[in-house]
Length: 335
Image (cartoon, rainbow, N blue to C red; front, side, top):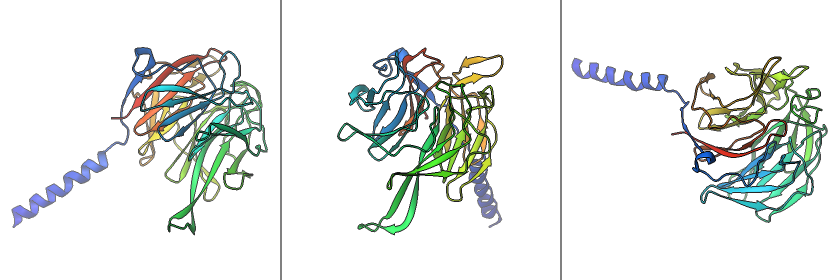
């Protein structure tokens, strides 16, 4: 009996220790159009709006020898790019957000403009404008589960797009950083001001995970420089907290989550002495509240990009730095 109890005690300790030591962060690996592993972009592009519809990546607007309204759609299953309907409004430096079958392109240069691209009928619609003109804002969708139920007995979802910061300058690190934030109710088409982040940022990235919105990095100050900030927003009570900083300051990077980990990719490191396009990757473990650096290096240093998650992969198309647009396409896989 004693032997049995001892065996059970040891067995009970092994999984507990394993769970406590488990790390949500995975090194992962990259595939790149440089090596023919994924299809290259149809043309060089930077500062585009990026979204997802099912297994397709939708990239709109951006700079390619000039500001554009072009739409490029990547099909993950066939590794092919397709052309969508061109927006009548040419711009770059905006931010994308997607919900259901729609991709929204928000702001850009210094604009209040919001447009919606609907993939199902390949069409554009101009939506209610923001109250503040923003270049380089951060945005993401947050879905509230309401108390109301639909015909099938499912709780009705109330989706909103949260938009943070930006700048009043037409290009990265220019003008003044905006100390404001607002939220767009997708169902009613209305904008409402919300509490801005503790530290105003431009060209940051926002990622929704676990009932919070993580506002990562971005440019701060005057003159603007890159930051390593992590600011965490609670949409339920319109409040902020400041999390642990990244290992590397960056702005205009790409960020998205896989599982309970937010991966932050590339971006611009800019201070009084450096203006660098990064290829480094680090990750934030949402469960533990810690950063891990030195993950698999991105094949191409990139800036003015975004990332979209489809399954366990992050898709990061294009790059640029003040008009130096690139057509490479890198894909991160978490094994």
